[in-house]
Image 1 (cartoon, rainbow, N blue to C red):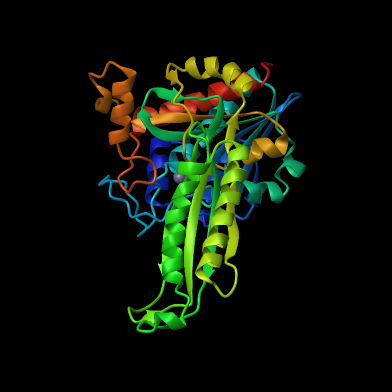
Image 2 (image 1 turned 90 degrees about the vertical axis):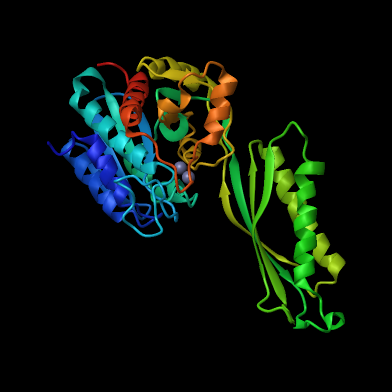
Length: 400
Ligand code: ZN
Ligand code: ZN
């Protein structure tokens, strides 16, 4: 086996050795090694653990192709013989697929460089799951040192049938905001609530009232989600604590809706605290903010035939409620983004189905990204992912 020809073996190796955001050192080392072998200029340690590969190939535009490298704090339950060997960490979002496919695409484009010209900027980013890896690379001077791209391309593996690619123009992945909220009360003995301001009751009331933001305030035609995923307070039944903490995740596509939901949450949290007689206003920390991914309609329309030319079926899956920070690269460059879903579900699950509705219903029954059982089928997913990246990149690079 030459250094870089057995891409499935590399995929399985990455899958066995997942690393969390900003800890992708082994992965980054492998990426740098393979990029170097393909003749790329390599810069490591960009935005902590990101890797950049640059292939300058004469006059022409710079095209950015991006993969993410990080894994999740999940205990894998796929039963695969190449399952994670790292306790409590797994590639449950398939970023190992993205890394493998982009490395292979880089090799293929390097081997055929007499057929195109321009600059290929391969970006392997850390910490996508933390929502800050792309920004870390940009803040570290990615474009200052390597040039600003005319387009940002990338893909995310998904439980669509392998052999399909999902491409949606417009808002494709939701904006994500996370608020960490501390409600202040007055603690005391559980037998004497009259001497306290109970933050547990304040938190319970706040959680219920927050359900009205989407149900009663945003338009039914606008997508928005408000989820209180974590609620902590107290230590013991007979102690009324002096504070309660909420962690809230918010998803939206349109910026107006995003701002409306954030303002409503702030109003409700402060209002509930005031109504309960809190000794001081709550602390509301905006700890995560990732913009929606907007796929440029013209750029999608231009790239779609290239994707279809690889033999996959290109479908419009509609917008995805999950979030992604790939859009940061496009926003910072003032360039269009084309980010597609790569089908990774074993086609056997879809045999005999005839209607789109049947397909959509079946997709819903399969383990999705972030599930401990999520396991894309390696073939033809890896092959299709490589072909899609190569074809889309070639579309944006002039022929020589
Ligand atoms: Zn994920
Ligand atoms: Zn992901």
